[in-house]
Amino acid sequence: QVQLQESGPGLVKPSQTLSLTCTVSGGSITTSYYWSWIRQPPGKGLEWMGAIGYDGSTYYSPSLKSRTSISRDTSKNQFSLQLRSVTPEDTAMYYCTRHRVPDYWGQGTQVTVSS
Image (cartoon, rainbow, N blue to C red; front, side):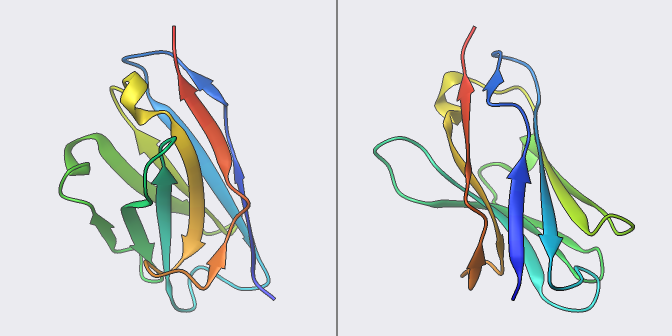
């Protein structure tokens, strides 16, 4: 059974960088599959942000590409999200998932952008 767990600060100030990490258990991020970040702002739908593949390849939403980086630490079986220059519009529940159309989800972590 694959399990994903997000971690990171729940409050980020405007203009700073949002950093989240997803720890994966029950499967290796280097064996196969694509590992994504998805967010849901309050009252809005789900937004796919980007993904990192089993081979380290990265893919980003065009609307967020200029501000987003996804990386991984294979020794810890983790992958991470960095979102730069955040604004209050980046306030959302952030999820890490397996695949862009997910079959496994983390529980989600709320991130609020506020001064």
